[in-house]
Length: 179
Length: 249
Image (cartoon, each protein chain N blue to C red):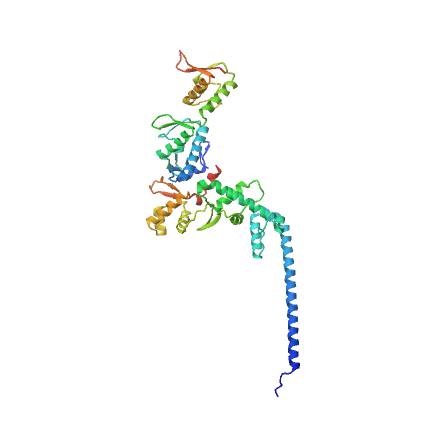
């Protein structure tokens, strides 16, 4: 089976017609479904948060069968993810897409359990610390996309679980947990 | 001197006829008895054989197929009924019903991808994978037998021959001769182009496109516009091994 790094590619990735958007409804639904799963799986295992439509995303072409997805097909698959809440466009032109293999709510839950596991219930952390600090090493939060992290933090802020404030001396934002 | 027929002569003739008849009846009776005896021996031998090789019949697909062949030659159908000697002895009826259910399952699971047409060989492979935990393998012959039993349900399961391959159809689509010829052509590479169909089958362009469009609509074909030569290719998941691999994922 073909691999991308340590990622096992599904069989359909080597079947050329899957790189052409299918005109027949049922066939296309199945095709979109398979691509959605593949994109989510790949991004989750490779920790990829943003997919650019015009960039060289490894899934968008397969040199083995000499096929690559048209712009239209890329957009169609991502659009399907967006409509399910598993992705969001970062711009109006649909050129960059945020992939939510965890939904924002799920990320918020992950932050909460991270805070509890580390006894940070009343502590203050900077946003950067959460992303790359020693505490988050080895957890899913390590290296999380900043946009997603901020969205999850704001969700928690709305629920009164924390307060976000702007530091006076640094550019970075700080978070005060109050669980 | 010519003797005229007398009463004695007539009586003689009658006695002779009677005796011939008696003799004939005797011979016939002896023959039937012999036949009956032979049949009884044969049956007991066959039962003895089945009993002795019960495990082989259950476990070894090749052996099973030969046993079926032998039964067919002597006019015994072990699958005719789930009751009675054969079923009780071999549990062979249950085996095929179970297989039938699993075949229906696989056909349904792969339908979105292959449009309800699956290569018999592929079907058999998936079946073996699914039954891994059970003892013994399953041959194509077993699949065919199980499918023939499914026909009793009137569910439209059918085995069609396209070229050298056998395909199992689980949707009521009627494939006409044109469609079959295209599928046969596609077996070589897994796909065809309109040009190729026209050239190889000497069809007009309209006829080829029409048949291919139908196959597309039925979900049996997929288009591929990605090749360098820019010619649209029509792929047929049912003749390539991808169909079932997709179902596994």
